[in-house]
View 1 (cartoon, one colour):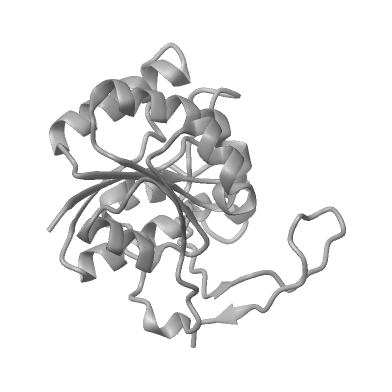
View 2: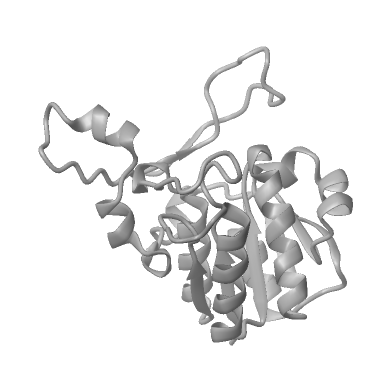
Length: 222
């Protein structure tokens, strides 16, 4: 059994501080990774440096929050990831991790899948997972291979996955501290909106000419 720490990117990192992250904006992949790891018998801890005030800037905040969480948990494996817009956060977070612990780092998400080799060389994690990571991160937690870029096992049937588990990331706080955009969206129907997003599909049915992805099959959970 391994202790795995999953670190969530800070919403709009370095652009504005503080920015509150509502659950409607939370990356669902972290919930799926958590449930997959727990089902395999591993301990999962979360670090969600969102909705935190009292610091002079975003870097000072994540430096304090991430380093303290690592020292408290003493994880065997640290995972993080995100979109290309999270590059600044991921770069700073990996630097903070390296200065705090020797635990191996695994990086995933769209930012890796789109350009794995360059991202691996620039951000220098120990592992980078290309594609859907539920099975691959469990294999990493079971036994660490040689560092490098790993190709994930495609998830053909979403019904085989356990439901996402968001407990380690402070779900209650995110439901209480939603963003202003969410407040405006729901204000006409609910006096105290607490939106909880459910994502039951993967892939994109559209063919936008500006997107790096081509047409793909869309998978749905029954």
